[in-house]
Image (cartoon, rainbow, N blue to C red):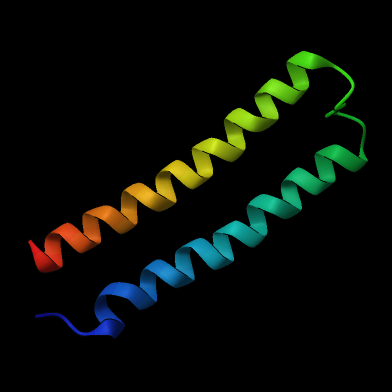
Length: 70
């Protein structure tokens, strides 16, 4: 069985460092006015990109667990 350093450490690094970049980007577009939460369409797309990020986090974690333990 692969070790923690070959399975979960890259996963943690990918989604922590990538998540920081992602959320800094969201903060920048919010502060610049490109994303306005008063507009219903903008709020919808904000939830879509946020949901997409967490969808891939959970999908990736599920596939790692499936590969290791199933």
